[in-house]
Amino acid sequence: MKKMLIATLSIVLSAGLILTVLIFGFNFRNIEQDKTYEAVENFDNYQIAEYVITQYFKYYKTHGLNLRLSDYKIDKIELCDDFINQEHIGTNNGFVFTVTYDVKPFFGNLFANWYAGNGSNNDTGWCVDKFGYYKVTAKDNEYVLDFLGTSI
Image (cartoon, rainbow, N blue to C red; front, side, top):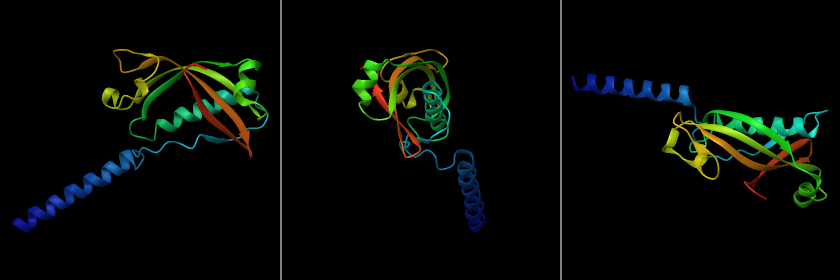
């Protein structure tokens, strides 16, 4: 009887582990993404900004623990003027842009990294009206995305 109970418990625990891996994978590790994206030909700066920021948010829909997202919405992308670009890019091949966005953290308030900084929380679990400055530079057929902050 005891052996049968142990065997049943082993099967149930193994099945639970397999199910957990299938559902969530091993993507709950807190690994910051690389933030380099394959360059796309014939994109203007606005299209590049839209492309890299979308890839950035898509990553967090399937990876991370405290940064994992259930959903996101990009509200507005604006390219910065030449003065800001010169100040933050210098002679590098790139540009600065701003993005206004909303995010819905996967675990709600349990891991509040997305709630830090600007934006406000609503009763549906979304953190809305977030804003940030981002820099994109081109290097070796890749775009490199860097977060500059909420003000510069």
